Image (cartoon, rainbow, N blue to C red; front, side):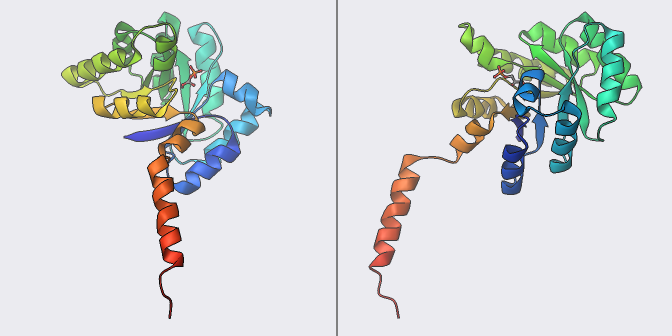
Amino acid sequence: MKFFLDTAERDEIQRMTELGFVDGVTTNPSLLKKAGAPYQQVLQEICALVSGPVSAEVVAEDHAGMIAEGRELAAIAENVVIKVPMGSEGLRAVRGLREHGIDCNVTLVFSTNQAILAAKAGARFVSPFIGRLDDVAQEGMQLIEEIVQIYENYEFESELIVASVRHPMHVVDAGLLGADIVTMPTRVLEAMFQHPLTDIGKEKFLAAWRDVPKA
Ligand code: E4P
């Protein structure tokens, strides 16, 4: 089970990389806007911090524009993966970018059919957004269950990234379903370390240790 960080904050990426939990990074235009520096510089810095794949999203709306933008982004660093929005133009761009040896992550996937098409187009990664489905009272994890099963049935090579993660239970559920990757905000990864009984236990042991006779 791989963990990607869903952020463009370099200090957060550095901190979690030092802890050894970052297998890759996903960014999007909203996250790059928050980072508040020129996007090429931000992506370059992220790629220097992380050896795994770093997704950078195209904003063109036609396949030719996406391919041109994707090639520019891919030139920033070797580990850049191009995030392409789901749709006929996007999937055409996935095939085009593959011809240039560039890997893609198909984003904004909200249905099983979309995930099947993305895999057939040859996407290296496919990103269903489960939190946004939960937000509109649709069961995001049911989508993951179906995709995992179908990818297994046909031995599709695309790796499934569970995206739009809101809380640690999403990570647990993704793990139970056998999803390849979870991309999560830093606060979710940080929350995974926490349990109140761990804190209480540490305090008790420290208090006891104070009363242990020392030579
Ligand atoms: C994934 O690649 C996306 O950047 C991300 O998970 C979107 O999450 P959101 O729904 O919290 O914006």
